[in-house]
Image (cartoon, rainbow, N blue to C red; front, side, top):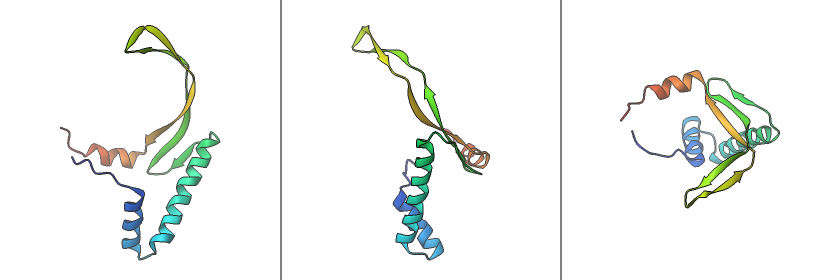
Length: 101
């Protein structure tokens, strides 16, 4: 298994190569898609992309943590919102095919 990162630029270049469309046009569409997903999540909406997965906002409860350098001191960690992603069935099936170490 390799540790290669797929960047937004890589996506734009691949889509442009396969479709023959201009990279700037592809970049605009990809960026707008990501902007709209971010906007929906910022409003607390769930984003469902069929065959890919679901993004949703979850609230993590406030909790007490420990500083490893001073374990006798409690640290209050406030409640906060975070984005969770659940892969769709087709993505899960593809990932399951990866060899394990």
